[in-house]
Image 1: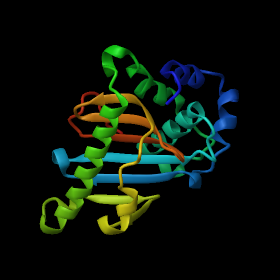
Image 2: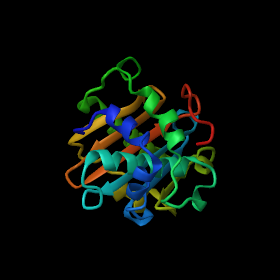
Image 3: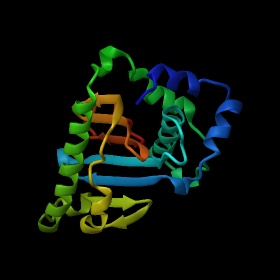
Length: 203
């Protein structure tokens, strides 16, 4: 993505009167939200949130909107959130502290894309295996925009996106957060396991 992580931090720290017009400009139903739970790594959570470029016309605005939407999903009581609300202090504390090169290690777009593809494949494969696994079945679920679906019904949403550009917010063994851009949309993919170092217990 043709933006600097520092720009995201600066934008988030701008006066709330400057941030609110952006947050309120996009309704919740413009986002496609895929939420996944599986027994991979004993228990993993993932979400893939995307926004059409027709709604967010540049990467910086899209990044702020996607991070705010994912934070809504993380926070308890998210169903009561309005898009006019933002937990920007939580966003800054959770993501913006990891922008240093020492923490991210400068993963390439190819490395980020490969990791995203692998995780989506693992999770969808885990969903197919739950049909024969009584232990795993209660731990697996797929929700598309809040509606539960089985693996076959959700298959179109689980196809790895064709990534043109990407930027890592977290990129570790047990925790991955990647902003990405495709031909027609911007997206944010988040995946973590309970053993992830520093994983947010509210997720």
